[in-house]
Image (spheres, rainbow, N blue to C red):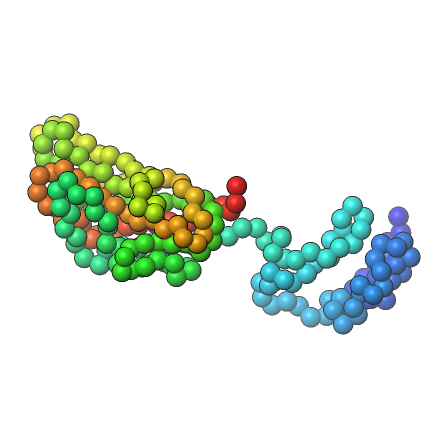
Length: 216
């Protein structure tokens, strides 16, 4: 196979004509000498509609960059409490994460504490909450993710002995979000008998969510 030398000025229309048009691999009208020159460097991430040339089973075709870049794990959320939150006994309570630390796509509402991602896909959730949830045998604390008002991810921490137990309750899991109307909230529950304060220390109490993958 003969080799073609790329000219100093880049790959021009004239340089392509000799090897491609002769083999009917690409028609001359598809070559624009003002575009295929290689004389100007792209100094930024390509736009989704930027095009590259590829060989598809020997046929030169254009392809948008959006097909090559892969999927992004966004939106990404991390929210924390603005202060301690009182959690009533035996009451499923939405955790009042009113302070955003990360919200890449502005899809979290700090008033109703709902994460409503605008991209469809499977999402990974982590919810943690530091609270005294048991001081007697058979008392427990639950921490959960609710989707559209229904529990979809949850974990229970129970006390098997008669001693005070304060710990960071945690749940993790994956659920699908439709990218339009689906919303998720972090929720907590305990049966200690009296109200207890959810600690606002951001090392132990937080809400994290991010997209893993698209349609399936």
